[in-house]
Amino acid sequence: MVPMRNTLRAIKSSEAETSIFCFANDQAPPKEESHYWVDFLHQPTSFHLGVEKIAKKTGRPVFYGSMKIIKKGYYEIEFIPIDLKPEESPSGTITDRYAAILEKTLNAAPSYWLWSHKRWKHQRPFED
Image 1 (cartoon, rainbow, N blue to C red):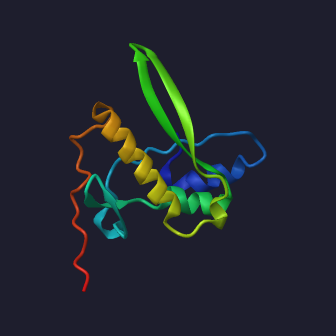
Image 2: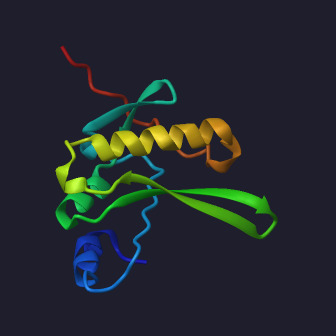
C-alpha cells in the first residue's frame, strides 16, 4: 500500500523494476475535485483523473482488472488493456474507457459492486 500523496514518487522509483500498481477507484471524488463527468449507468457521474494523470506522466500502460469468482476462494482476473501509450492519448480518454468497461462489468454482474457507497453524492454543476 502506498499513501496517495506518495503514489507518483513510488511509481517513479520503481521504473527499473517490473511492477504493477493497482488503484481502487470506486468512490466519488471530493466535491472540489469533481471536474470530470462521464455518463455512467445513465447518469452524470464524477470520476477521479488521478490514474490518467499518473499514466500520462510516467508513460505506463493502463489495464482494467476484471475479476470473476469461479467458486469460493477461487478467482480469475483478466487484464483488459485500456491504453498502452497513455502519453499519446487525448485528455479524458483513459477515464472514459475505464468507465465504459466498469459499466459493462456492472451490467453483467451487479453483485460485484458495493452499491451502498455514495457514488452519486455530488451533482454536476449547472452549465449555461
